[in-house]
Amino acid sequence: MRLRRTIYWANGLALDNLKKAIASDVDAICMDLEDGILPMNKKACREATAEVLRTWDFRGKERLVRVNKFGTEYLEEDLAVILPAKPDALRIPKAEKAEDLLALDARLEKFEKENGMEKNAIEMVLMIETALGMYRCYELASCCERITAVGIGMEDFTTSMGLEERRYIPGNPDLTYARQKMVLDCLAAGVQPIDSGVLFNGNVEYMREDTQIDKYQGFVGRSVGDLAQVDIINEVFAPSQKNVDWAARVLSGWENAMATGNGDLYVDGKFVDPPVVEKATAIMERVNMIKARRAR
Image 1 (cartoon, helix red, strand yellow):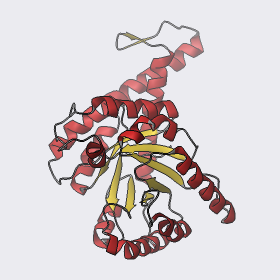
Image 2 (tube, helix red, strand yellow; image 1 turned 90 degrees about the horizontal axis):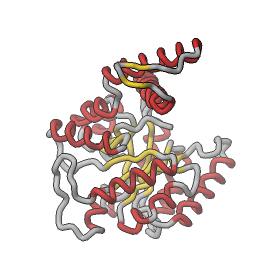
Image 3 (cartoon, helix red, strand yellow; image 1 turned 180 degrees about the vertical axis):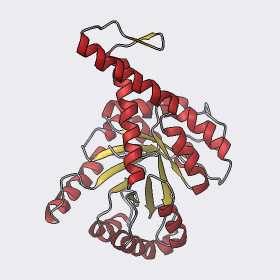
Image 4 (cartoon, one colour; image 1 turned 30 degrees about the vertical axis):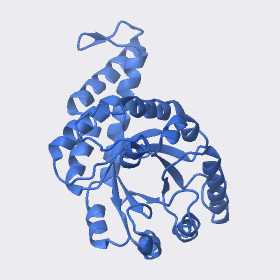
């Protein structure tokens, strides 16, 4: 599973900004062909994006492309131009029908075979942006192995729910059920739940507080449109030093317990059983993923 604490929105028509993103600490960069690109600019953006994917060094960052939604005139053109540039993943907007995803999965598998690529080398990251998509979230997330993450697009989703505005309150209680349903559906399907970005720049303290709540709700990352917010989000979605130290003590104690046969293990005054060890192991695995990302 890839590290996706921050997925930064970019496009092939803003190359100076893209260079800054590549030089930053974002985990992934999503090149947009959909809502962020006006219709008259889509062809130029599509071609520029393919050229960037073919020729630029992304310094180990994941390279996603958000194509246009199923049923539009643009999707076929997106795939024809973008697939030969071999992105790491396609970000699928407004996902609603498993049959659409399965048809795209089959097309990608055919492309991979014809080009000597490993199966599922091009992943799919879904975007849930409608009430119907949210209702079907588990079905969508689990319909094929190529799908490895699901994000929520809050602007489209709030529109779909008939809300007049999206309130920017840290840990906003609006749509709590829908957001938690998505997290549970994702985790049940074995994929990553990714939260939405925001439509404003700056205000890193809001981002810190809101992202901390995201983390405790089960999200593992979020979209971001402002490079000034990246370090805060990455920090929050990384294990704290306190938790890393705790995990190390747990794993050391458990290893000793297994060697001695003494199962009565306490760390920091709290009993340690297999689920606690599993939690500690997950923390250390995430630490290692972050270290590997920095090394690249």
